[in-house]
Length: 55
Image 1 (tube, helix red, strand yellow):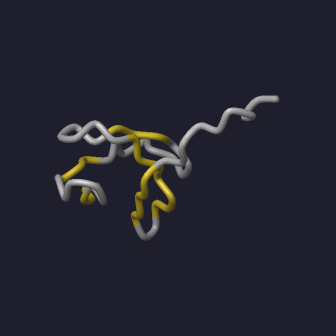
Image 2 (tube, one colour):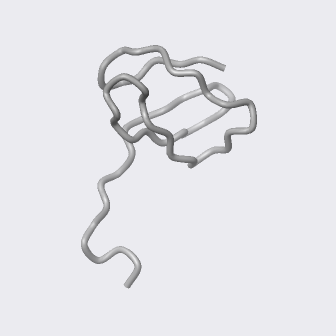
């Protein structure tokens, strides 16, 4: 499965065992992406870590 980075338009290969909500990094620009959906394949910028996460 392939998709395009929403930040830099690079081609990204998604592993066949990828799961929804998994975080991946763009190999070109390094931005963290979240797999929103597998069918249809959709990725978006991963949310920024908030200070109060995990409390």
